[in-house]
Amino acid sequence: MTDSLGDWKRTHYSQELDEDMDTESVTLMGWVHEIRDLGGIIFVLLRDRNGITQITAPSKKITPELLEQIRKFKKESVIAVKGTVQGSPKAPGGVEIIPTEVKVLNESKQPLPLDPTEKVRAEIDTRLDSRYLDLRKHSISAIFKIKSAMLHSVRIYLEEKGFMEVNTPKLVGSATEGGTELFPITYFEREAFLGQSPQLYKQMMMATGLDKVFEIAPIFRAEEHDTMRHLNEVISIDAEMAFADQEDAMNLLEKLVHNAIKEVKENCQAELEDLGVELEVPELPFPRLEYDEVIDIVNSRGVSLSHGEDLSRAAEKALGEAMDGYYFITNWPSEIKPFYVMPHEDAPEKSYAFDLMYRDLEISSGATRVHQHDLLVEQIKSKGLNPDSFQRYLAAFEYGMPPHAGWGLGAERFTMCITGMKNIRETVLFPRDRRRLTP
Ligand code: 4AD
Image 1 (cartoon, rainbow, N blue to C red):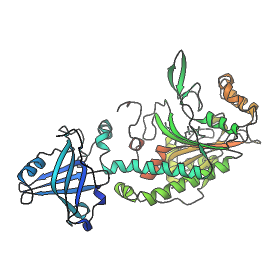
Image 2: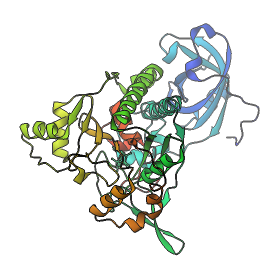
Image 3: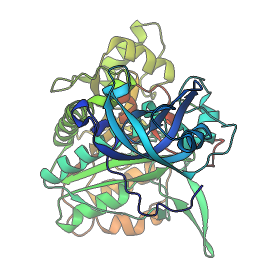
Image 4: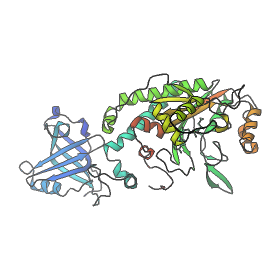
């Protein structure tokens, strides 16, 4: 065993090898995925970031010392192998490596708490406890490569549309989305909270003349739910645009979602294959349903939903059976939307708020915002909140706040839609839920 790479340098990843490299010398580095010792010949599967390569060690072709070194390999140890490429139609990738020198860079403890070869299925809790091993499975790391590609696409798309990326505080003094879902923290001698949405900050940015901003950052929700769709820390993709309304916000959102799916399909073929996902790029524009129509659909499917109620899980499921793919729900009742949402002028019980759904899952919500100071104060009061707690936010509305609109898109829920994952925990490296605070 050695504690350093010395002068060893990796020359290739597994997937860069092919038959045309026959007889070429290469150096690979990775983990011992499997080892099969047939006495006169040892097969080792070396796994790296991109793939798996077979190391073939026949006693006839290599020294007894080297054979003995390889025989001692342990599963999941980190190894480096120097050797010669040889075409081998039966081996993964069509090549094998005949080793000339090997090095154990770090030995793995045995037995393993989790089997990265995926031969033994483990419960999600066991997998999350040993996430570093779980992520060695290509079918698991594929989810995060796709999430990363989606976030990259979203960022580039928004920048191209003239949005500026901003960072707003996560240590905050007040609620934004209704008062019940906050994590309190001690902020020196005062109480403060972990931010549940950049909502108030992105709105204040609208008064600066920067016009279009976005943020991709964690939000914290102290929700007690233990479901497949909720976590207590998630990434919100938030956008806010001035001189714009709900229609502009929905147009931006559907195009961004369409574009991200198209780009993931183009750029993550191997990862989608690892997951067995046939990704369909949704057609534009997405269908738009009014809240009242949703009530009819849900009721017609035998699930009770009255006007003024938010969608229960049963209602979401009934709706998901009726609606395939992505669709908007518009014209929500004002009473179940937050104070910053603009009511209809002529029918204030209705609001200019929308949700973006994928089948039975809400992935985004947005709205035209209230930009008039006095109306905002009135709405804060009508939600049973105290305008004094929002003094600094409200001040931004007194000195020329333009009309504006925006939305928040849950990065994990969107990743669930793309990857077909049913449990949101699959889309977060180290998820935070009601029970889990480590690793
Ligand atoms: O619907 P939410 O609470 O809306 C807001 O935060 C608004 N300020 C957004 C806006 O600009 N109007 O959250 C937006 C999205 C949800 O649709 C969902 O995808 C995700 O954030 N989200 C969660 N995802 C998983 N677990 C949770 N506990 C989530 N809370 C919100």
